[in-house]
Image (cartoon, rainbow, N blue to C red):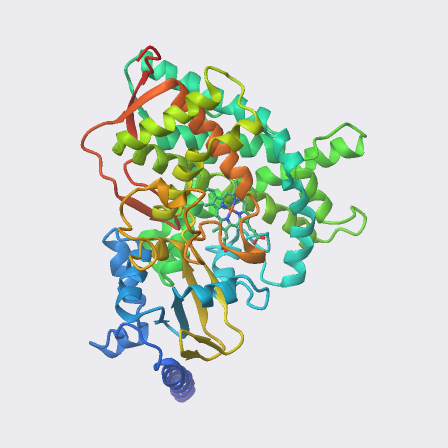
Length: 512
Ligand code: HEM
């Protein structure tokens, strides 16, 4: 009995000691938060929720969570705050301090320089999704400059003009399949979910040109679209809600996200292995992204596990970055054209003048579709499908006269700047003439493909693909939005039209 009491006493003491340590750690954390607040609170920003201590501790996290829960776009919150607090606005997120920057000069200085790497906050949350490796150290997420530069140097030349010209065949062929599907829908007088359809095309294109694989999603079903969608949704929760995975209610969702990551990575491993075998057998293999990914990983004899992982990181990166953003841009573009018959008429006339009844659109034709380029640029102003980027501000910097001490995370949003009256008059008006070749170029307030060394590798690829799809669509079909749809956006990290852009399509009457 005495021994029992002694053990009980020790256990109680040990428990007290652990609680004391936890209390000390918590106190230390609170003091650290206080220090951060003192260091950065001179920067204007929304008041922190301070109804209770817990709310104060969570800072603006709660505000984001409530806003997202109500279906809001986080970038709308940034827009509201930028308009209220000015070109540099402080946001607290637990012990992270973020400064939201909408000052063109600072945007130029930070994004155009390689001194400011991608931030650890974002990197950590995209490296793994709920414990399953996702984008890892691939091109979008690589934080270490050397590691990133090594990959970019190998990938970049793949996007020269000669290479892009060579893709026109695939762009035409896959867009033609979409036209066949639209013809079927037009004949059967069925509605067309444009987002779903263009998503199949862009996924088909990236699988074909990057990895040499024929998915033919307009005619076959596949688990990829769902897996990609789950990964994107998982990304948002992982980024914006630190405690998401801890909620037992979210378990089935979290498991499906993990499963989706695994599916993309195991597919990558198989396709990479098939390609390596073909290379070892001396077979002729396409000089595509997959070959570059294998090359960037180094020699087979000295390949480490990290090299293998890096190959899969880039495989997933191209699947995620190289497809959905373009599909969303196309869907938004169709939505805006359907809402603006005058702009639709003008762009259709240009397509008729440049392409006529030709089926095969050439690289040189694309250069002549100037108004269509303006329409696509204006689409990305109001709807930048990859709305923002972030950087680690490792050095002190002055933004619009306000000193920002080193250590904060800089957030930049093309969405916010694109919707600010001070940069674009009447910002919600869809007006492609803002991008007329003679109009003044927006000064560091329009960057849907980001800017500087970490800007989008696939910008030209994406815009060529979008032009081919749009030109063929305008050449052959009239489309109107099925009534009753909202024009709202869905924030899945990337932005997409919530309604899916459901249209009635009919063959164009060329005699008109
Ligand atoms: C409309 C279509 C697209 C938009 C709006 C877009 C936008 C962007 C943006 C904003 C970034 C910077 C991301 C960040 O800083 O976190 C980026 C990076 C990137 N994009 Fe795109 N993208 C598009 C299409 C594509 C396509 C088709 C590909 C591939 C073929 C691609 C490949 C990449 C890659 C590899 C990066 C990382 C670049 C680096 O850090 O070196 N993107 N994109």
